[in-house]
Length: 279
Length: 283
View 1 (tube, chains in turn orange, cyan):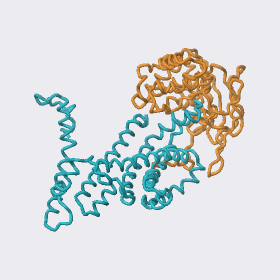
View 2 (cartoon, rainbow over the protein chains, first blue to last red; view 1 turned 45 degrees about the horizontal axis):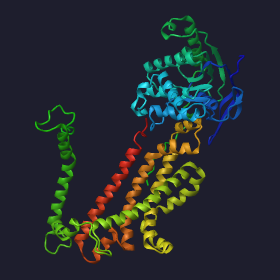
View 3 (tube, chains in turn yellow, brown; view 1 turned 90 degrees about the vertical axis):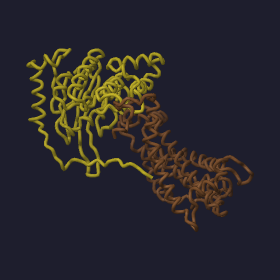
View 4 (cartoon, helix red, strand yellow; view 1 turned 60 degrees about the vertical axis):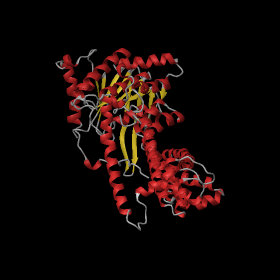
C-alpha cells in the first residue's frame, strides 16, 4: 500500500478485570488508503468493536499506535466520526437538532450560521431525511434513526468514517436499502470508511478490502481479501457474478472452516443491571 | 371498556351535543363521577359514625357549620395570628418555597458531583445515607440553636428534608447516562459546560424529577410538623392552635386544605417534569 492515510501499527489490547488480564487484540497491523472502504469481519466477541473504538479513540490501546493523516490518535474527535450500532441519537433533540449539535460544534469556526444551517439540511437530504426535520428519534423508524446517525457522522466531514455494525439492528429490507444509500454516498463523497460487520454479503458488496479477524482471545488479522469488483455495484447482478461468489466463499470459508466459533458459556461475563433509585 | 373513549367510538354524538361537549361529558363521567361517589359514601359513613351524642369527633355537617366563616372568608386578617386559611397556607407555602428551592439547587449540584466522581461518591454517599434517615423534626432544635430564629430554622428543616431524595436520584440519573451518549459527547469533543447542559441534564432529567417530586412531598409533610413547634402564621401552627382551643372542626378543615395543597404541589412538579422530560424517553 503506497498511500498510508490511516495506519494501525502493532495494536495490542489487554483488559484487566477481576478474573485477571484478558488479551483481546494482538499485533494488529493495517494500512488504509484515502477513499478506501474497509470492512472488518469476525465472529462476535472477537474484538472487532474494540478495534473500532481504538481507532475512534474511545478506547486506549495497551500498546501500538493509530496514525491518521500523519498524526497519532489518542483521543476521540470529529475527524473520526462514528455511526454507532444503536444510532445513539439524543432522544430529547429533534432530527435537525441532533445533526445541528454536531455541526455547530465542529464547524463553528469554519462556517457562518447560515452556512451551517444549509449544511445540516444538505446532509439530512443526502440520507433522505428532509421530511422529518422536526421529529424526535422516538417518532421515526429504526432505519430512519440510522440514516440520521449517518447524516450526523457525515456532517462532521470526518477524515475516516467509522461504522460500528451500522445495519445490524435493522430488518433485511431496510438493511439492503441503507447499504445502497451508503454505497451511493461513498461514490459521491469518496470517504475513507471502516465498517465493522458480521454479515458476509454486506462486507463483499460494500468493501474494497475485507479484513478478517481470528477468534479471540488474542485476535489477530487472519486474512485480508481485496474485493476487485467494479463500482457501482448492484446486488442483483452480482448475485450471479462468479467473482462475487468466489469472494463470498472465501470469507465464508475463513469464518466457518478456519475460525469455527466454539461457544464457551463459561467465559460469558454477567453484566450487572443498573438499578433504579428510590429515596 | 366500550364506553371508555367517546372520541373514536362509532356512535354518533347525541343530537344537540357538539363533539367538544360530548367529550367533556365523557371526562366528567369517567374521571369526576367515581371519586365524587366515593367521597359521598365516605362522608355518609363519617356522618353516621359521629352523629351519636357523645361522639369525640364532629360529623361533616357540624364541621361545615362550625367552620363556615373560615370557608367563605379565607383571606381575612384581624392582626397577629388571626388570619384566614388562605394566609395561613400561603405563609406555609412561602417557607416551603424557600427551603425547597434551596434544596433543589444544592441537591442537584451535589447529586451531579456524586454521580460524576467516584471519589466523591465513596466519600459522601455513606454520610448521605446516614443523614437522610434523621427525621425532619429532629433537625429543628439544632437549627433553632444555630439560627437563633424560627423562620430560617423552619426553612432549614424543609431544606434538609427535601434534599436527600433529590441528591440520590440525581446521582443515580447521572451515573446511568448511557455510555452511547457519553461517546457521542466525546466524539464531538463537547466541553464540560456543553456536556452538562446538552447531555447530562436532559439524560438525567427523568431521575431528577422523580427526586424533585419525592422532595416536594416530603417538604409539605415536614412544614406542618415544624410550624407546630415554631408558632406564628402557618397552617401547622393553625392546627396546633385549634387543638389547644379544642376547635376540632377547624382542624378537620385545615387537614383538608393541607391534603389538597399537597396534592397540587405534587401534581405541579409532576406536570413540569412531564413537560421538561418529554422526549427523553428512550428513542
